[in-house]
Length: 259
Picture 1: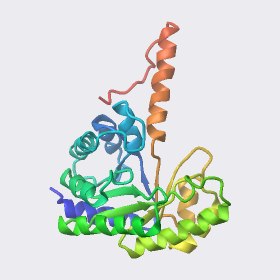
Picture 2 (picture 1 turned 90 degrees about the horizontal axis):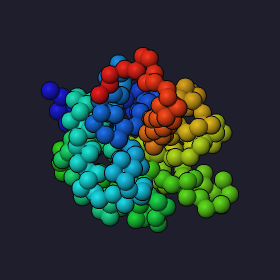
Picture 3 (picture 1 turned 180 degrees about the vertical axis):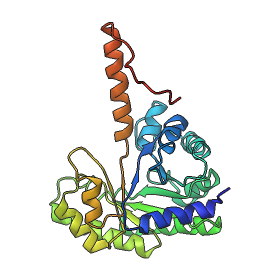
Picture 4 (picture 1 turned 120 degrees about the vertical axis):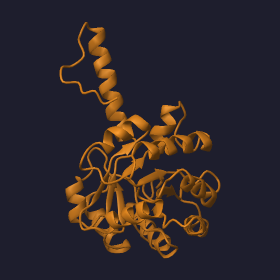
């Protein structure tokens, strides 16, 4: 059986490889098993937004931490030797302690967002996360998220870009492995971020209208994830088939037994 430390090392190697790491976000045990069954799957990422929605909570740390971590643990158990990176929002008030507890559930990496807190406070959170991993004996892989674009509040794009680079460099210096910059990033912005933060150090989200994974890879991006988009695709399919059934339709032929 692969140890937790070995899983963390695997995740770090996947981020450093020339090929972009594509992680398809999951939200419960059955979605995790479904993705883990694909031969292309190298790692699993949870979507905090989607887990919260599963239990009827809005995104943004409205779900109780115990409930979030319980589901994360179930996902870890469901996927065996695959490394799991968890979306831990902004750390639920104590990023170091939250990561320590997540490690106890088998997690080997995480996204933790800064919500544009003062830079000193955000760096301190990164340092606390790195220290928690070291204390638990796990080379924890932190995908430190900056909300420089998604919480821009109408400021000029060049200011958001400069802020993302400043924060990204600071988080890497504090021990983060990657810098996650969510937003619909075009090629020019992505290129500038890679130049400012470093090749194979940028993590992005695949949104409708964004670049493809192959395009991001060519620009030097390390990782692409999909956040709540995967659950939205699944729920769209569910609602569409329900509407068809209400019209006296039938379950589509070829439906696979994935549960």
